[in-house]
Image (tube, helix red, strand yellow):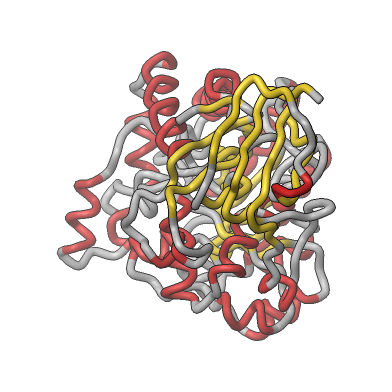
Length: 411
């Protein structure tokens, strides 16, 4: 059999399944692995894998010896704001000096600051900066990613953010899903209700007509958009084919979980502020709770009660929230470390949450999240490490040696 790529002598082929599916509760603790194994890729897809002693006679264009190394399916990062004009380290200093997220926003910082900078930047420069960040996250093992708009806050800039997000996949090979997040903040000079009308009457139809977004999202939070606003916007998006996601319960119990469940949203993300009511609602829904530990870490907020959610039988996904204001990192191995150290997940639970469940959160379960026949040949090879647990344990280590996307080496 001829193949394009053959990985041999793998210490452990991690996350071997018959298919990718959403894992809930105790299922997250199970991480199937084949020791001393091989993996074969042809035309960008997995065509064979198994123990080395079952290896058939392959004619491979490229052979990689992974002795002493683990092979993982690439991370699926289901929540990012990768398209932005500039960093906001000046706000980082303000936070160190004691300013809160709300205080910084009230001074013209936060989302409005990013919107101002993006408005002044050309498409070419914005794309180039975004591609730099995309390549950065690819080197840390991310092979599929969601990218939101939300720093435009007017029709023109929201649309060009989404177009640039689509371009990322064409230029890098990353699997990209896009999300329209016009309801990220209210622009200066408009009332909230006037802006909601603009989103519903103009932005959503234009996004849909250009087929620019797979999903629609709302920042449901005190001082931004209410539970009822969120429902209204999500329902308008759903009418034109955009499935819902929600920024929920980051700073307060904002009603974001309730709005997401009510609208059948794919996911509710953040969840730093959760009560029993929200956990019970999620038990009886198909909506995927998604923790963003990088944001809680950077803003010094309480971490989502992930241990409690898993023990209650919920699914859990883990994403980076890569953005310039509250989580300026898309490093998914670090997100695993935070999940283990600060949210008390086991390494197996964290890995499942960042591969299997995030793939489901982006509706990529037919191609990503695990190793199965026909899956995308998108994965990473570690350096020589003693165990799977070493990946989140050695939180500052450079442990990823090679990354492949659809069978092509990218680092």
